[in-house]
Image (cartoon, rainbow, N blue to C red):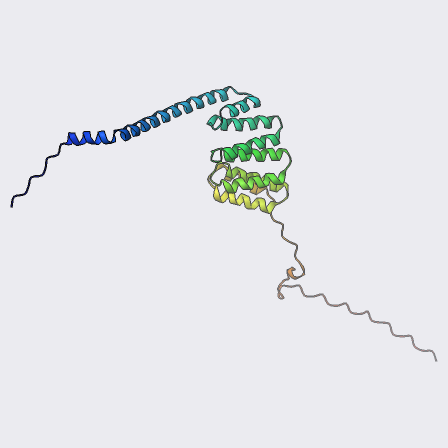
Length: 242
């Protein structure tokens, strides 16, 4: 039985009909895409120019006030992050240790994923040590070693604890940290330093033997006891006279 021929399709006519039907929507979508590309390109250009200007300003900054100007004019830029660290160093050189630590704490809060966060914490510990807060310094070094075990500052934080513990006469704790460095960083420079400190730590003093710990020789090797002294013979009484 012969089949009826399929009606022929006019592709050009269908395309024209589709365009006439949806030309407003297609035009709006193309405009949105074009504006997005232009906006992204403009933002990248602006960001690059701003970052370059911030870097140039930071390169010419030499004082704490100029570092603060870089931070205020170019926030959220890599140059601003570096300016925080340089500002803290300038404050430390002026012996403003508390202000330097406040600056470093702001840097850590604003850039928690920065690669120099552990370095900022080490600088905070150095400032605390300059202020004589030894217990806080020790706690800071412990936090750095535990929070950033894979950073280059971790073994330095451990070794810095050794010096403080030795000054506190906590030789057993210092010895354990030296052994930790030798175990975890055996192929590094810090392992040699830990070994040197381990040699300088006084050995653990053994307790004095008590009554039950007195060493006794075996019975066969013991010296025989000296014979007890015999009483001297008494002279006989004189004979009685008749």
